[in-house]
Image 1 (cartoon, rainbow, N blue to C red):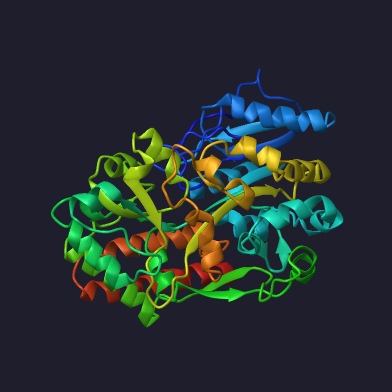
Image 2: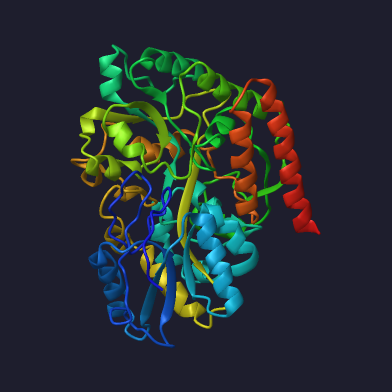
Length: 462
């Protein structure tokens, strides 16, 4: 099956040449029976969410892998999906029909769903090939690795990621006699900056989803709508590849609602007050596909996004000196939200060893440079996030995309348990309700959110 789609945030598919528009897309070629390398029963079947552009990017990686492994033919399928939840639903349908792939490229939103129900742990392969893999781990921030541990085991090697930083339109700032804020700016500084833009551009534009929606405001207020816990385990992985790292775990766990935490209410009320004052719009549903054009034309002053936005802005005609990126403003903390993506090996595969070879190849610097030739995402390899990568497109402070992890080591992944689809649906619905009226509606919406989340987790237990 081969179709195209607009892919939401940081769904930059390894093996694809990237052509980001609206910060939401990743490129993948349209494949036919004639051009799928290794088509047939013996091929390693790799499933990605992608569209029909840039066949050269995919072909180079497939050819490179098969040159190194001539005994492992590869078949890559691109599947159309509206978002990650839709993609995961289609993967589950394929599993139920007995037509599941060997490998699936998936983001943080589906990492625990796959780990719980669909994927094989990679620990034995990673530790067996530790010397070959050392170059990768030395180049990748440990927070990104921890995000793909689940109940003590590693299920994916992250290849690209994005943190929710704050994009600022320098044209809007200059028109209104404002200044670019410093790295230690506060929530109150942010509010005042928006007031300085009011009457000119839309000061703050955001989307209603797990990434870049309400969650960054919860994180900087030292809370979340789910109780965040850490699993035990992972000691051998940490001691092998990050011997000086302390305090790491066997992965994140989100198993209970935290919607009634007073700080959750406080965060919702702050954003509601921005809307009431005319400093922010009500959050747009979906991926915010129209956002790049509005930002590039000077009609939006600020918006949360990751490094995936750079290429889209460049293709939208925005020069690097017309925008910049700053860390998310500080509240009680300056903890950031991030999401990542990588390949998962399906439990049902009969080609686990070959699948590991694909993952190992894909995590090499050479393969990642083919996969991410333009700044339509942030590569997980620190050495790839450099001036050359952003020349002609990136803002002055492009280094903040990776520095977010260094400066704020408590930054964590999107809160995405195995029930991510139901959890995100509940969040989106109740965010819309909470922010559509007066302050009294916030409390009622959070009570409904708590009830919805409890039902999700109780159903899982039942």
